[in-house]
Image 1: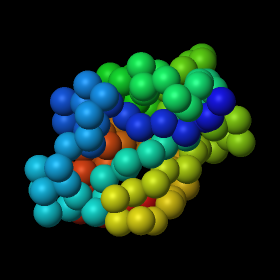
Image 2 (image 1 turned 60 degrees about the vertical axis):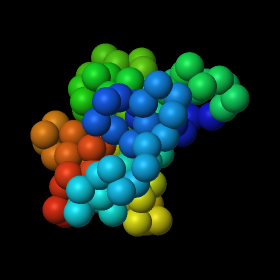
Image 3 (image 1 turned 120 degrees about the horizontal axis):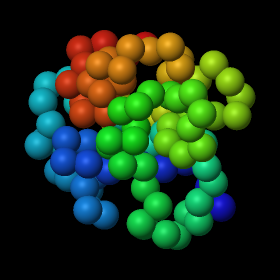
Image 4 (image 1 turned 90 degrees about the horizontal axis):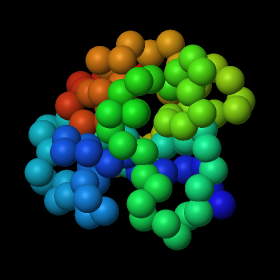
Length: 110
């Protein structure tokens, strides 16, 4: 079991169980989240258990959520970026900023 996952969607790094070419993203794609902490543990071998972008957009540790992005540690979650860095993402991050990180369009990282 694992509590780390990729986010899957049309504008994220993964879609339909397939990764995308990193040159398909814009000039800020170093700020693209590739792997994120999730609330619910899943089998690490099951490719159907990725976090959908629509669920990830609800935020980190969304109130009452049992699935999606987040951590039992409270306050936020860890995410790994295309740049190779790992950062703590605060649960109070604006939803629009989180979406930009999931799509690799943000000029900055938290």
